[in-house]
Amino acid sequence: MNSPVPLVPSLEQVRAQFPALSRPTAFLDNAGGSHLPRCVIDAMARYMTEHYVQLGGDYTESLAAGANVAGAHDLVKLLLNAHGAGEVVLGQSTTALCHLLASCYAQAPRPDRNEIVVCTAGHEANIGTWMKLAERGWVVREWRAERDPAQNHTWRILPRSLRPLLSERTRLVTFPHVSNILGEIVDAAEVATLAHSVGARVVCDGVAYVPHRAPDVQRLGVDWYVYSTYKVYGPHGAALFGTREAFAELEGPNHSFIPRERVPYKFELGGVNHESCAAINGLWEYLCFLGGEASLPTRTPSTLSRDRAIIERAFGLMERRELVTQSMLIDWLCSRRDIEIVGPRVSGPSRVPTFSFVVPGRSSRDLATRANRQGLAIRYGHFYSKRLVESIGLEADDGVVRVSMVHYTSPGEIERLIAWLERSPD
Image 1 (cartoon, helix red, strand yellow):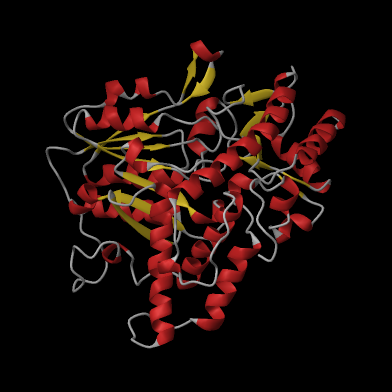
Image 2 (tube, rainbow, N blue to C red):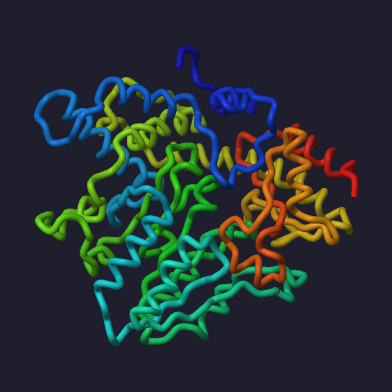
């Protein structure tokens, strides 16, 4: 960047980093995938131009390609605070990585621990693949969302409801860090503590959490943590963290001649997407921008001076910006008697700015489609949380209206949405 990076970039300076935000559309479907800052786009293009070669050679371009892949793993580990705790596997999607993990567990039977607790209030990526283990003799116990009388009968995922489902036969507990419908942050550390008390491991789906906060897998105490990079200002891909102990219990599915201890390579079938790795590395420059630091884009990814404190400052700024817009929307939604919020009716640090609601007597499809015609990019449906939507009593295909913001969402866009909702015809 030519000019000095401001200590705290303004919203206008942040939005200027995203080419897509120059369009008139108000992008309020960010839980489905975020936009890319220019530095991420440029990093991918630069790799494709300069280092698009195979790994393993001793020539300059191949060494740079290897550093690119290693750097992407390193940045994800820094984002998750995973250094020293375990390894990171990169893959096509969160769904694919969960299927990979379930397949590995299916190949490593433990007759004394053949039970799995699956939270059915999350995305199907971390549900369906585990439910299929019942076909292989596993006992699957469902951990469901429920109405909490202490919170105005709001639908919630309550860790206390997990305890009765656990036993000395429980091997795994799978759950979302945040439901992509409810928006509330689940106490992952408490879930991990409960599971570990009976010797079980946990698989935490962080897809709806990581776009807003930088998770600390060591503080959370989770065994497995997965998220989608394309929802965190990066390429269409995903990452899976696992502790050393959790990886040691499984054998990866990559070629038989690859040693079992070659993690993550043993779990990365055919290798990783190199251009996606370049885009992941490009995110560092944007995080430096948000964190008030000058980035080092001319140095190779493996030699960048990367500091977790920069990530924490960057995501701290994201959270502060999001609190403004989420308060605007939730305050308005709570003021309406004709709108039912699905999830906590509160703003603040206990949730992320993903809001679902229904208007009794009106089709969610119709409402969202009308908004789309006005350049308001919102969505309707079950968002692959079909089991949760149906358990709430809604028709899955129509589902809920969902509005999801991130740190680059402007107050003006929320004002525009509210103004349209107020005048929207019945």
